[in-house]
Length: 336
Ligand code: LMR
Image 1 (cartoon, rainbow, N blue to C red):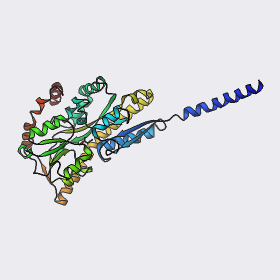
Image 2 (cartoon, rainbow, N blue to C red):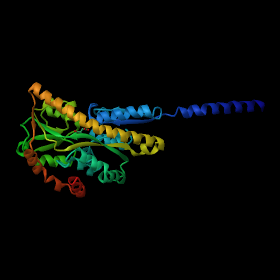
Image 3 (cartoon, helix red, strand yellow):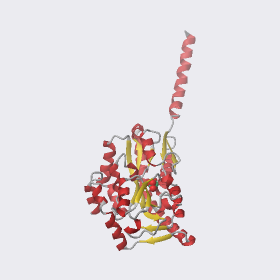
Image 4 (cartoon, protein in one colour):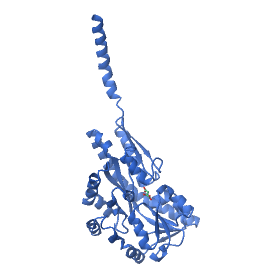
């Protein structure tokens, strides 16, 4: 009997000692953040900055690992992988939500946003809230956290300089998966081919497509300019991202961690806005410098009349998607 008591006492002591050790060794929550662009872009920078801050400030509680340049998942796959819980975070461009939250194609409407401030007013205001609600209502298992900027897009191609609508006739463009972008190209007289971002360089090089539209940072960091003869700084459409998280993963995080992550993401979003402007300026200048030095790329800037002619050509697109993008949103944004 004495022996048994002794054993029980030892056992109790072991449990008392080991319990705090076991809880102290609780594994940190792991966030895998997958995206398709280079690190030296607004999204690449934002993902890295988010990871840096979380890994520092929530050390031992949360670990973030970023997978850039389609290393883990490309484009639309990332949304499915996130919904299924294979990754915890992603930031696909609005166009990639065509199959899940089609109203996000709002951001693909050509010449809709007057400037970047208009985009910020949109995502920070009622429209942004309505989009958040759409994610909830659709029960996708995806939580929309915030919106990150890239910049306005520019056209490039190998057939001829793209100045007036007639120049787009018959030109094949790589586009993101948005139906609005397909309609935009059609309205201009061109053809839009939906291809994943990771395939754009090869598609341009091998002539699968003649041209593309993207921001200076994507064109610069993925070297699309090397396989294009003409580039037009048209600023004809916005490119931005919905930063998303797996809903179940979010729900199981303790409240204090949720609060810290939300705070970090709010602050990183502010910084991404500044960084996006800076990178757009810098990388546009680098493309222009390459054009000048190499003589292999011709660059064009549009005057007000040329912009107006392109705007008129794409105007019919606005009436083609009234069942996808609420017309009230368009009206509101136009009046901003
Ligand atoms: C594209 O496919 O061109 C972009 O969505 C890539 C990106 O994420 O910026």
